[in-house]
Amino acid sequence: MRFEPSVRSASHGAREYDVDESRTGMPRMELLAPAGGWEQLECAVAFGADAVYLATPRYGMRHRADNFAEADIPRAVAFAHARGAAVHVTVNTIMSDADTDDLPRYFAMLADAGVDAFIVADAGAIAIAREAAPRVAIHLSTQASVMNAAAARLYASLGVTRIVVAREMGLSAIAEMRRRLPQGMQIEAFAHGSMCMAYSGRCLISDYLVGDGRGANKGNCAQPCRWGYTLVERTRPGQSFDIEEEPPVAGGVDASAPAESFIMSSNDMCMLEHLDDLAAAGVESIKIEGRAKGAYYVAAVVNAYRHVLDGEPASVWASELETVSHRPYSTGFYYGDPGQNAVSDQYVRAYHMVARVAGIDAAAFGTGRIPSAEASGGPGAGCIGSERAAAAARGDTRASGTRASLVCRNRFAEGDVVEALRPTAPIESFEVKDLVWHAPPDFDLTDVRRDAPDSILGPDPARPGGHLVKVDVANRTMECYSCAASVRLSPGDILRTKA
Image (cartoon, rainbow, N blue to C red; front, side, top):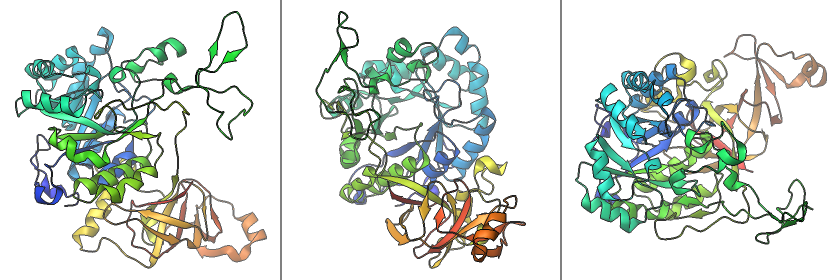
């Protein structure tokens, strides 16, 4: 079945699921998605995540993500819970005494906000969490590098209910751990995303090469493992030797520069075609890496995994994972050595998001931005998901052959063919026609009136003081446009083009 809030219990804790194993051929696994910010949260739950993991700027391993202010956590939790998704908060940095001093207050704050689980790596933090927030589940982070049942049982005695297993474990080792663990102890494993060259991410290279403030174990890694390296012999300053002969990347900054070797750069993980093996090994939750990734990445990856988990062939959706930024894919350590990406540190970027749908007519713009839980000032009020839910309640979730109100994210133009990424429908494309810019009230139209007076179509009925302007190109990021749509669209859908 598709993502349905009704299959989750109201407790938002250790939930039971309606499992149709006859359709999927495997027990249902939770789909856990990254939510590095508000838009990623919206996309994760809209495209089918059962749960999300997020963080505030403190104690999380992704300082480069947008993250959530502490004051926003209650609204983020309410937003997810209203759509049937659980919220896990990462508190998994390596901690000093100074870090732990504020943990009792911090855990209590998260518990009051209604979060479902803490993802913790430090044993002291586990003890503090049990005391400060005894009703919140504790999940052991992969940073703890648990690779055997004895260690898992020890953490269980401390109150841990789920182990996020080390990414270095093979499927046979996970299956053996599952066999030795009591049924109440859950196993979570990464299924997709970037991998670290250090053991479970416990790395000091960034600290050493970049300096204080860029420690990987404090969530601020500079990723020196992705840098290009050459060998220099100390008696020959200025002369570099290639460690592994590879030509410079075409179109690089300096094509005459010496060849470089990416001796520590790992491949990305992709287990879309092997979800049945993860389920058979006893994995209850599969995790998508990427709290530093954007909304389009979250939407496309979650969408693909949701469809396959719900019984559709992986072969149908594997190509979707080629549309997001990624390095060469591998199956990680699940079947052996994952290999190395020694050729380049660059991501493959086949597509980019050009717009998100704000409504199916011009009047849906309101303030001209996609409504979100962040901007609404209340728990989920006015956000895309609630609009979608309200439409579903009316039995009319989509409309075709109408105008789509859009928020521009990247340049697109009249006549471009765009693809629509939607949670409950196949990928469809259409040609952009009748492109209109919704000029804001404070924009001076003097030049437009002089150079192209016929392009001003009149006042914008949805925005007092605004104007509708016929244009050939949408190139004003985060501003409002509309166009004719020949496919069925809903608020929150994503339009993309080939990069």
